[in-house]
Image (cartoon, rainbow over the protein chains, first blue to last red):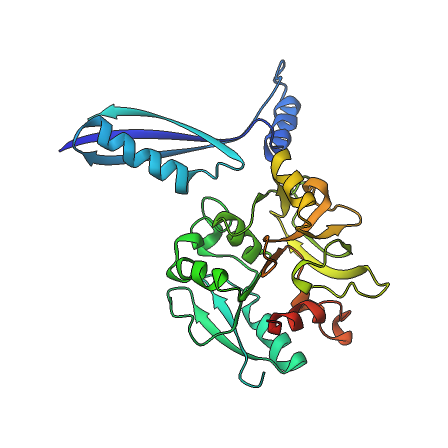
Length: 84
Length: 221
């Protein structure tokens, strides 16, 4: 069995308003940071998982992302995978 | 109708379950039974309410983890049989997360938790959940939510409009919902999800009775 470290990034789709991101953008500007054009908040999920090779693990992560980690009505996801 | 029983689902974190039960039993004389979320036996209830509050801490997204409870798994057959399911607030969020209703509910546009009475237009008579046979097309119900902004893509919205699945629209949209949507039904009409709380508007002494009709309609076949 191989073990993998997976980082999943879940983001609101571009068409979905992110009011928390907008509020954070306003605070960033108040802090004095200049030049911020856009700020959106997402989630990062770290998973350690084992399986028989990368393909099998990708299958499991795809299922988790599609059915649980992200709601694809409002969110997109992507992930990176590193063999340990 | 004497034995008609409404199942009120209890998740870890539900906090409107007793309100729903009080409204049904105390105001409408309809028998209720609490259903723990780990139960999958729905054989002795005739309709189901998914009440407001929180479920599993609403971790990840509201309703995202509740979707995997044994009770929600069993709900599919129940809905297919034509029995009625009412999802209020967190219950509405669970119904969208689990795919019984389209779209999703996201953080309010102004980021505030809104606790207020709102005026609502009754849009569709699908499922006969609202009393819109007379001239009273507007009702007032309380809302209490931080994540009640209904969102769907334009194709879904067109489908909702074309098939008359939009049950309620806010008169003064408080949370930024697409198309002012406050509640929708499935195509068959036996599943209704809404953010406002009809169970909190069932007695004049607490501010109105506009919620009675919706709860009473649970006993319709």
